Image (tube, rainbow, N blue to C red; front, side):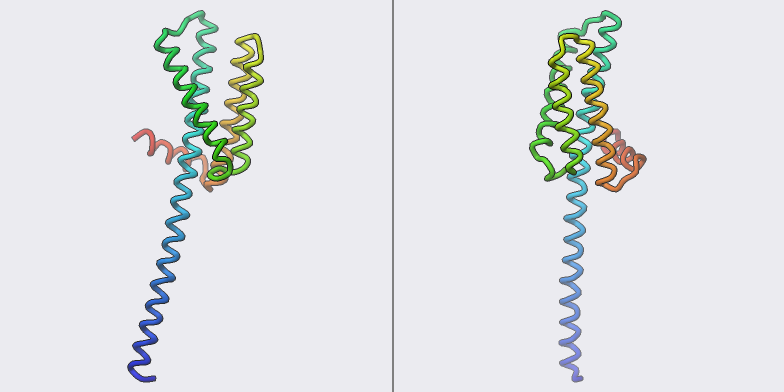
Length: 166
C-alpha cells in the first residue's frame, strides 16, 4: 500500500472513531440527563408526601392535646397542602413520561383514597384514612423509584441528603 493509501486509511479510521465515540458519549449524556430528571421527579413527589404526612401528624397531635393552630400556622399548612397536591397532580398528568406505570398508579390511588377520606363525617377517621393513603403512596413511590433508578435505599438517601441538606 502506498503512503497516500495508508494516510487515507488512517484518516478514515480516525473519522469513524471520532463519530463513534461522540455518538456513545451523547447517548450516555442523554441517559444521565433522563436519570437526573427521573430522580428529581421522584424526590419532589416524596417530599410532597412527607410534607403531607407531617401535617397530618401535627393535626393528630392538636386533636389529642386540644391545641389549636394559629392562623399563621394554619395558613402555612394550607399552602403546603395545596403545593404538595399540585405537584402530585402534575406528575399524574405527566403520566409515564417520567415515572414508571406503578408510580403513576400509586399517585392515582392516593387521590382516590383522599377523596374517599373527605367523604367521612368524622375528622379523626379522615385523618386516619389520609395518613394511610399518604404512607401507602410514599412506600410504593419510594420502592418504585429505587427500582427504576437502580439505587439502594442508602444510595437514595445519601443523594437526597447531599442535594437538600448541604
